[in-house]
Image 1 (cartoon, rainbow, N blue to C red):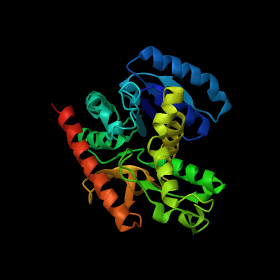
Image 2: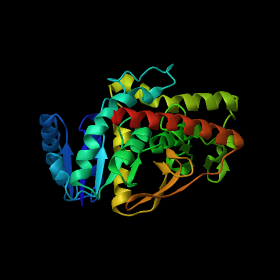
Image 3: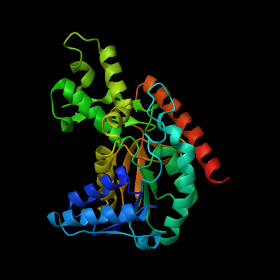
Image 4: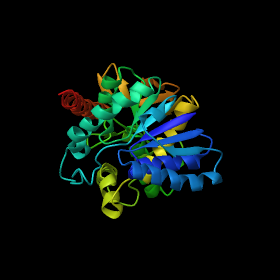
Length: 316
């Protein structure tokens, strides 16, 4: 199967590399970037690595080369560092990039849909959730989802595992709502081996509330911490993107916290989503405390406002 990656900056390149390394996920990867020399260079670099993985062809091209693509991953647009979204005191976070990247998507999405009308569209560009709402509007179909809070949920698991001295894969923990500062960490359902993490944390004398504050701060601003060290947050989200492409192509019906349009909430947000052929097939609301429900409601309102702004910017 053919997979397209539109935007071959740090995240697009990391996504393409992860697709190659996963092996067997797809047969062909097409890289597209407005800087054609960059797309050519990344494609050439990856071609030399491809023989180490199961057969996959990597090439650069134009939008017409997306014809027949099963999934198109959109990572194009200004990133957090270039867009000035690295201020921890700014509650908007990634939403600072919304207007600029909405204009980028207004140009990209119609071109993708024209040549690949049956493709599933996966939005990675920040802020991914309102941009997925915009993509759905521009594409005229529901085969659209964003990477949502999967990367945040993985970060939650890693942070908890570090403190509990266990493997992250043995921790069950979810983040829902916006992939951004209003995201909701579901502490009430976080478990290790069926044991609530709140029963296990704080045994070293540190208060649970203080520990929760540290963990939430580390997760909400993990991207900024990474950017301060490397200039771009790319490897984690690249691996996440490749994993999600795999789930779609294999029709796995994997339950993951990715974002799609929820008819009951009227906006794109992350819940417990069933991901397979065609994108998100079902969405379920996890069990939450009243406090977590209120936080999710606030996150939904943030996303509704952002989605409305994105459509307004893209259509004027």
